[in-house]
Length: 48
Image (cartoon, rainbow, N blue to C red):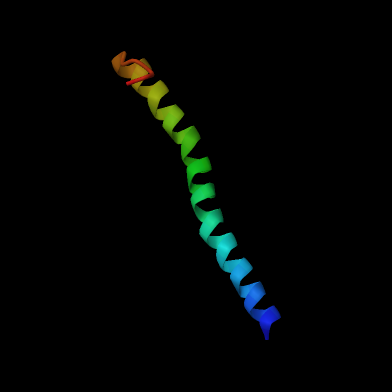
């Protein structure tokens, strides 16, 4: 029984930690592309 709770706890921790990591990692290229687009189209600084 304790083994079952350990497995469920590990799965819960993996989901709670994994989903934000995947979202942040996926958003980084999108953010860079948005900054490059704004730089080309509007002439904004990449740091703005």
